[in-house]
Length: 454
Image (cartoon, rainbow, N blue to C red; front, side, top):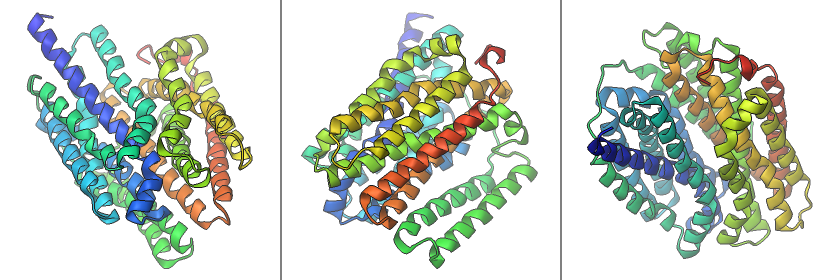
């Protein structure tokens, strides 16, 4: 690679890495700010759920077609447009005078993040045509997300101690730096790809109605008419989505994608992983600050061991898979998550925070034990031509799991006789789901017989 090409490739990698960093950061940084948002904006638990889920919902739903957008207009342009929407929405979040404005801006953030995510991977693939260099570049790109997930609670706690609005304003300098590097990247190729408008519309409607119903169940009760109507709408939209995928000429989810057993189990694992990994910080952030009286920075520090274990072990994940096999890693990771969730739920209300932080490490272990191996299993189980589509559907299943965890756990907190009861039910529910999925994981094809591209 010539020196000029190396500089352009490095600029592309830095832009993609910074983009992935802010996308991941905004998914986790807001958790430690929730009690402050409740106080300043007069938000109840249902309002806080929408602050978290507004971003996750749009991000997950639009990922299904965001890859096609990047192909149609070029990855560089799609990334730049998504980044512009994301930064402007972040400014709107920081300036939000009320909860409805904040939620609307979070929805816009999710739209921008959905456009950026697949385009960032496409940019890396475009900049590094050599497979070996590309693998190294992807590792650096993934490190951006790992660092954001690890540092998010601490950064969020520190920024909230200044003003909660800074957790959103902080995206502005990162976004501007990303644009500087993006300007140095070469134009991306374009190709004509179909767009499944019916499938995308029904997917957004189904996910939105489902999350709305779960959140409102905590406010109005499970038998309330608006809640039942939302769930009925979600079922109708899901049926319409399934019909469009079966009969459509260019479906977002091709019929053969979920035919392999490994692909179906991988989707279930991705969903379950995010239920525990995303739901736990939501519940525990509220508990540590509202029930135990910790400040936002102290809450961020309490999450640090859980996040650090993922940052430290993720670089060794591939080596562990080669030694023990993907199936063993995934099952052990899910069992570790379940054990950590049960342990935290069983702690007395006055347990030292250090005990809570220590037991949450077991949940953190699921990150390096589950996420990289299950991604490899999924990509090895589908044809190469469907790898991008499979990745989009997989990430959507993950985001839906996170969004539903926040919606359901928030409803349980609101309906339970006490906060502790709602918290324990939520954590035990996530633990049970992890154990069921671990049993499903035992049926995965052994890693030794997977294709080598895993």
